[in-house]
Length: 194
Image 1 (cartoon, rainbow, N blue to C red):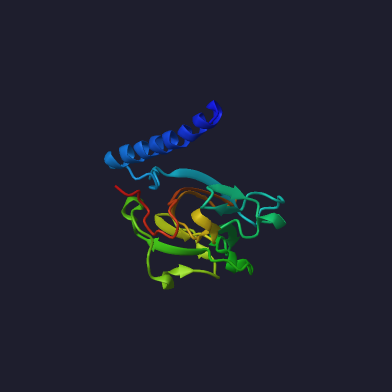
Image 2 (cartoon, rainbow, N blue to C red):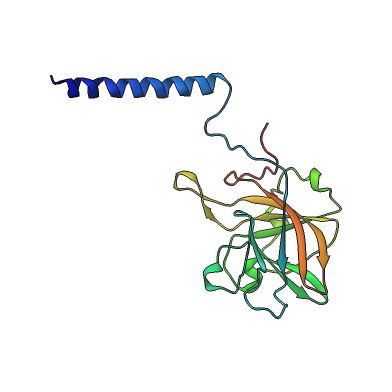
């Protein structure tokens, strides 16, 4: 056998042994290499009412991606979970179904509930609005189920998040809110696992 072949023959077992040792050491420390590590510290975002005169402003929000989206763009369909509009002199959240867009995104309203007390998205699907405007009210927590997104291992997932209005500026059609979204596929938990 040539020196090169002998070297290659011993290389594979050494790599396998190194990977096994790494896996054992991670498991021995109690760490799950497949666990999602995430923080429950909320982010802040701002979106603008569809009733404003500007074109292509960020009126929608994707909770799975944590970004505002101009929903008038054709490429935005399916990538936002709630939009902001002005109706009857108030700001409202619109699930995609309210604009005739087929989506799994839904909005649940939890009035008179503290933001920190909402640790799990409601299991009752009847609490979620799919097709009608949802009024934006101070002191109310909103739970969002996102549209379907690709997940790990070729899965399809909805993600759950919660949001709370911080500034409701009706005259200017602006909503500033804080939010958090679980990165775990189809999990209703809104706080990280211990």
